[in-house]
Amino acid sequence: MTKNMKLISLLPFLMASNVQAASNFLEGSRDVVSLHPSCRTENTGMTVVGLVLPNGSEVKVTSEDSEGNESTVNMQLPLPGVLMTTSRRSDETFNGNPIMSAGPSFNQAGMFGMDTITAPVPAFGSKNTEEDVRMLFWKVKASNVFDAASNTLTELPYIPVNGFIILEMGFASPKFTPSSCLLSMNVRGAQVARCDQVDPETKMIVADSTPDIRQKNMRLIIERDLENNPLPAECGEGLSVTVEPTDAEVDELIAKMNAMTP
Image (tube, rainbow, N blue to C red; front, side):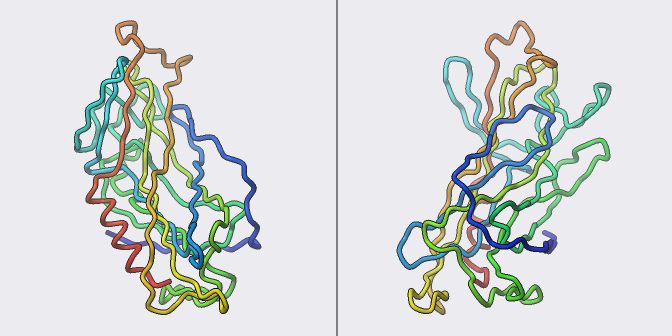
């Protein structure tokens, strides 16, 4: 995998408001989805947030029919062309990924150094791109105390317990093939927060303490544009599909989070 460091200029630290952003998007959209990580144990603080995306080459796919029956399999990407296309033109078809061109952005909690890890993925888009972001990381830092060369935080390297923040990830979604019965796609990413032990007096991370890894799902729902891309008559109520990273990819992310220097 190739690791690309993407550092941004910082805004002053502001705690975000309790407003939840939308998580439902139309096919073919370019938008952002919000993450809400936190640590909830006394004397811990969040230092890193990571996310692994379901963009191949293997993903976990759960399908649900109109009667609520589910089946789950690991599937190789690209997904069948009968389900989706990443083309922005009506006369082109490309097999693609459930989520593409993802990258960390920031909002009120603009106190993060941001990294991405890229890897080969099934080709997508009109330029037939064959590499995309596989993992994203937001790393807590304060101005002038984050050393990019050693990837080390030196001061205020945590968000206090119960601190409410919002992180944003930009992405592009595919379009559903008109002949398919796909009504919606629930895209889940494995979101992992690292919580380190913090000395209540010095407010610094306790040296050699064991990090606490918290995992939950990032969720976004891509919906069919029924006005411009109606379901075929034979599809009835349509098909819903959930796409997730494989268990092995989640384990890889957790291992990276454990090994990071806080």
